[in-house]
Every structure is written in C-alpha cells, then in structure tokens.
Image: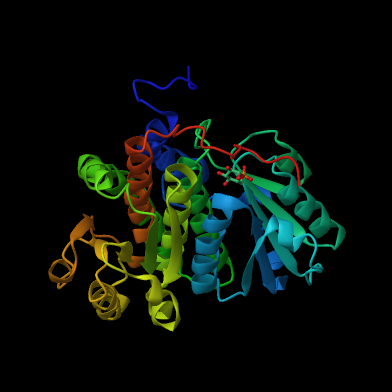
Length: 368
Ligand code: G6P
C-alpha cells in the first residue's frame, strides 16, 4: 500500500508532499516530548566526541548534497572540521583517517556500492563509522558501527526528495546534540533549535502551496537549454541540490554556482532569457545577493528568486519571487528545496518525461 501512488500522477510528487509528515516522524524518532535529543544507542558519548578532531561525511548524489549542508551546520555549531567527500573519490584517494576520525556515511538505500566500500575502508583505518540510512537492515546499516535511520518511508521515484530532507533532519540533530555535549550549545538553546525543527512541518506544508505557480512558470522555461542556480552560503548548497533535481528529470542542463563567484567566469554564459534561479534566504547576505541579481539581470537573465517572507528590495530586480515562510536562516534550506523540487518536477512533466524513471538513472547504484 505504501508503494502505491495515492492519487498522484507520479511517485515523486507524492513523495514531495509527504515531506511535512516524514520530517516530523524522523524528528520524533530521535526527540522526546521535552525536546531532548535521544542518541544514547549510537555511542557518540561526550568522551568520544571530545576525542574526535575530524569528521568526514561520505555519500553520492543527493545524499552528498545533504552532506554539504551537514558540514555547514556541524562546523557552525561544533567548530570541528568537517570534510564532505564523494564516496567514489574518497575510496581511492587515501584519505587521512585514524581513531580520532568520525566518518558519517549517508545513503538513502544503504546499498550504494561506493558508499559501502568507503565505509569498510574507514573502519579498517580505525575510524568510528556512523551510518544515516533510510532502509532498515541494508548492507550499510549492518556494517556501520552505529546507525541512525531516517523515517522517510519507501522512496520509489529515482530523484530523491523526502530522503534528502529527512537526512538533513538527522544531520541537524547530530550537530545540535554534538554541540551540546562538547559544551558549545546550552541545553536551552539546543531545545529552542529542536523546537524550530518541529515548526518545519507547517512551514514546508505552506511552501507546497506554490505548486500551481511553479507549474505555470515551468511551461515557459522548458525550451531553454541551460539554466543557472545561484546562492551564497547555505543558499549555494541548496542551489546544488536544486540544479541536480532539474538535471535528473527535466534533462535541462544547469549549473549551480556561488553567487559571488559568478563574475569570475560563468557570467559570460548569461544571455537573453537564460533562467537564473537564485536563493536569497540568508538575511546577513541579502544585500550582496541583490547585487548579484542585478548583475545577471543586466545581462538579460530571467530571474526567479526564492526569498523569505518580508525580504525587501527583491521584487524590483527579479522576474518572479517565491517567498518561503519566515524561518531561522539555518533552516531556510528545508523550505527553499521544496520550491526547487516542485519546479524540477513540473519542468519534467511539461516536457513529457517519465518523472519517476528518468533516462540512464537507477535508484540505487550497486556497481562501480
Ligand atoms: C543514485 C540515485 C540518486 C541517489 C544516489 C545515492 O544515483 O539516482 O538519487 O542520491 O544514487 O543513493 P543512496 O541510496 O546512497 O542515497
């Protein structure tokens, strides 16, 4: 039953709409009624964490993009160095790992071969390996030292959506718990943060209301051969996942770029009508982002911005703005990605593509 489309045209759309619910479900799997995080079973004790001087997050595809956000929040809250690596690179580059290293492997299926092999290599080198996966009993879950499950439920569409947002939930909880254990975050502030995570359910649901508008806008963009996704800081990391989503299912080439880096090369490709999707959800970077919008607009780009409700001076410089509900900057990525997912979905539908089974892609890659 869980595997039926439930009235939606494609599994991907159903899975996009399941996000409010599975975000909360995943939170509840690791948070008690007093907003305390429960990670007792995974062995990340205060002593162990104090001994760790480096974290690697290793994954492929969308899980890798979630890992980039994991790095952002882990470094911000814990001040421990985090490196994110593509599993197929990590395996062969002899990374520096020892018993003071924590390796977090991220995999929706728990079966991706390169991620699995990276896990085994890490264990051999003495690292503590924590897996975050969506499939109970998967190869990765069985081999890791400890496991935290995401409770996204079965993800059928090849393009990952709810697995990504629930991976983010777990990464945020790990970062908050870690920071608290090593004395970088008070228990009051930790609880506040966790409460804000619970607030996402409603905010994600509100963001989903943009579907019709995104459907409309997609129809005008499908003739384009190239698009750009921009952002600064956390917004850039969301842009990477937004670009991957539309490449996977709409087959329109796109590139994600840090907005500030644009002028060092890529801006040469901006021409009349080229769509630029820019995330501008970070309050402290808003002015800088507005300048970046002006730069591309002056070259003829068609600019779609994703901003927070109440953000000023955006509309005048863009062709279309999607306002996500007001939220702490660190959590905006949970909402802006919803816009990207729906946009990619409708681009693919408008092009008549098989959304759930895009050409050349597999849900889980168990070969090298
Ligand atoms: C494949 C899928 C992607 C997925 C990646 C990693 O390429 O098409 O959607 O992100 O594998 O999969 P995993 O199961 O390890 O998260």
